[in-house]
Length: 77
Image (cartoon, rainbow, N blue to C red; front, side, top):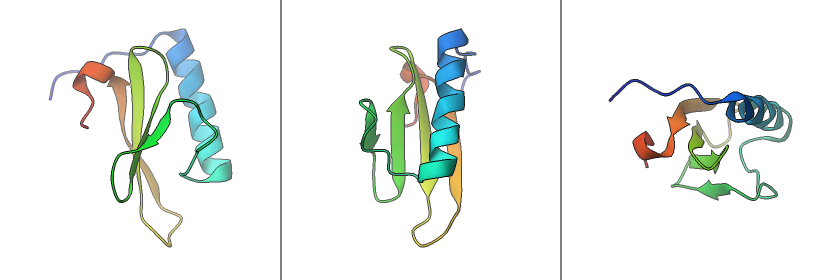
């Protein structure tokens, strides 16, 4: 996998809000306009037109892993 791009200011700001919501409300963020489920325990959200965050959530646990933040072109989905 290549080197991840650093998101611009708005992407970084959106990521901070994303993490805060995930911590407070859990992995299912259906009210987010750019949220979708990728698989059984995988989710993602577009932070900007160019950047995306992806995470896993193990059912019946409090474990949530953000495994990718970077450009949509390199996203592992």
